[in-house]
Length: 394
Image (cartoon, rainbow, N blue to C red; front, side, top):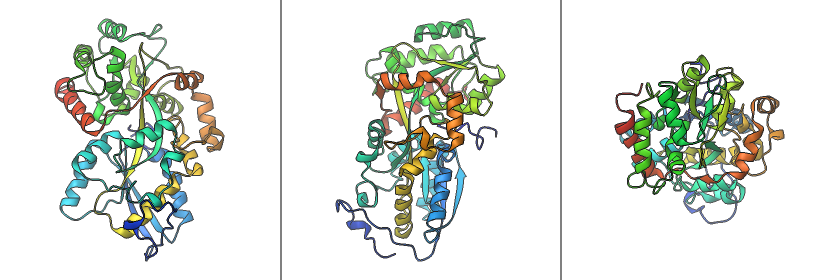
């Protein structure tokens, strides 16, 4: 999910033998590096809006571990290629990447990420014990090559302006009919670089009752047919979610695909009017989402020790409370027992004013589904690009 935040739309030696840590059962103590490290961190998920304060807290708490953190942002589709090129040239200068399921999957497929959760288990908390149940299920998608740092139920939701859409579509068939009657007034962004777009792509097989929602190649006949027909009424597909939010706010579109976070945060920021509404389609299920910390292969052992300690720090309840942010990844925490009253006051105020009471009930009562696994997600993105988005993405 690319973030709509104030930082994005308007526009962290001895004493730890890593090779022998797995399965020891004891929490490993991370040794200090020879001198404090400068860490290079790439955010390919918009996650720093949730976690940057926690990263900075680590730097302040551990000055003998980290001297500074250099944060950069990059579109998810560009990151795997950048890292692969550095690895092949043996000139890796990236220590940690924050990814969504898109770049996670691409990196797994290309063998870019370090296997951490088994090999270095004792340097981390017991993830199954601390994670919320859906976040633990999302951890499985990392195939041992990353750690969930934030979680939310996601979508897909319809977001619309009620004065333009007084009665929102209640089913996929009604949505298609609405787009035919209102051409170019509905939009969603390219799934390979959009949390809502990706959630829509993977949620539609459940909504349509397709043969096998887990198989985009042989099980999505209804989905691909529906998306092609729907596309006849869509002007173009933006490359990121932020554009769809701007267009909804400006009145270019009347209805878009959204998620809990993309509904709340742009309204907090004034990009989308506060009075925008959300609804779901018949047979809706949550397709859940998460952000992950991944470490590229080739990071030195000294740096790896510090990165594992940083990961553990980001999974404390105190750090996780920051992930409420201003609703962008609502709720946000992946760890059990992290409540809104633990979050900073500005987070509490934003969510209490712009959150929706119906979300609590919808989250509690609606089934959750995992996204596609890495290989199938890459195939689904490729097919969408070739058959749906070709020549109409900008």
